[in-house]
Each structure stands twice: as structure tokens, then as C-alpha cells.
Amino acid sequence: MPTTIDSHLITVLLVVALVVWRVYARIRRTIGRQRLTKVRPWITVVVFPLVAVLVLATSLAHPMVGGALVAGAAVGIGLGLLGTRLTRFEATPAGLFYTPNAHLGIALSLLFVLRLGYRFVMLQASGGNVDPQAMQLGSSPLTMAIFGTLAGYYVTYAIGLLRWRAQVTGQPAEKH
Image 1 (tube, rainbow, N blue to C red):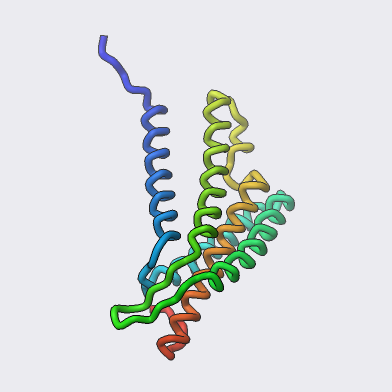
Image 2 (image 1 turned 180 degrees about the vertical axis):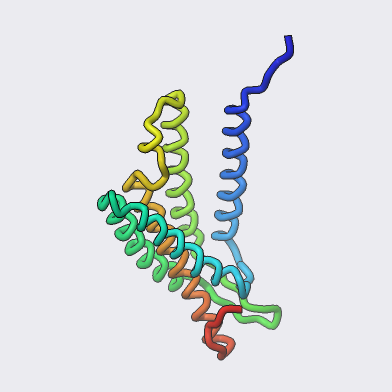
């Protein structure tokens, strides 16, 4: 009798592999010296607010979720300002570099990973017998607060990078 591979198991393994890869890439960017690119901060400044506005618009029926997102964003802005202050900036003949505060970056990444892991474990423990409405990403105030914190932090930090580049190069922070 041929053995069949459970498609659910394959899907779970692929999703886990993708998440692990992205988390590794994210944490790697929070440790050590980084070259300041012209494009990456702009992607952050544009994409995160767009996603946050879309999530906020879909949460109009759930004020607690929207409030958690806004509160998280306020915390994230404060952390982004702190993170920018704790960053070491370097203008060298080889280019512009920055070294983010590793503790802050790792803490935020772990917060996100732990929340995703918790939701994943709860889904797996339930055996798939979960109310689909309850498992939607935007249905949990805690998840939205964490997303808001990350969005606020990354956007504020990216703006700090753009401002530093403009200050060092003497050029206004424009899209490139």
C-alpha cells in the first residue's frame, strides 16, 4: 500500500520554514553593522503605514482591536525614537553604515515570534476545530498591539535613518 504524505503537514512545515527564514533574516538585520541602502527605509516608510491603515479600516467593527493597534503604534514610535538614539551611525568613504541596538531589535523580534508561536500552538492544539473568525490575524487585540508596536518602531526607525542620511549628505530625504 503506497504511503501518502499528509498535505496539511507539508503546508505546516512550509509555513514554519518560511517564518523561521524571515525571522532569521530580521534578527540578523538587528545585529551588527548594516549598510544604509537608499531603498529599504522607503519601503518600510510606505508599506507598514499602508498595512496598518488597511488593518485599522477592517477593525472598525471592533474598536478594541483598533485601539490596541493605535496604542501599540504609539509604544512603537517611542521605541523607534529610543532605537534611533541608541544607533551608532558611520559615514565612511565606503558608504553610510549604522549599527542598531541589538537588545531592542532582538526583543521586538522575539515578541513577534512568541506571539506567532502562541497562535500556531493554539491552532495545532485545537486540532483545527477553531472558530475561523477567532483565528483571523486582525481579530486579537494583543496581536494587533504587537503589530502596531512593530510598525511604529520600524517606521520611526526608518525615518530616523532617512533623516540621518539627509543630514550627512546635505540632501533632503527624498524617494530614490
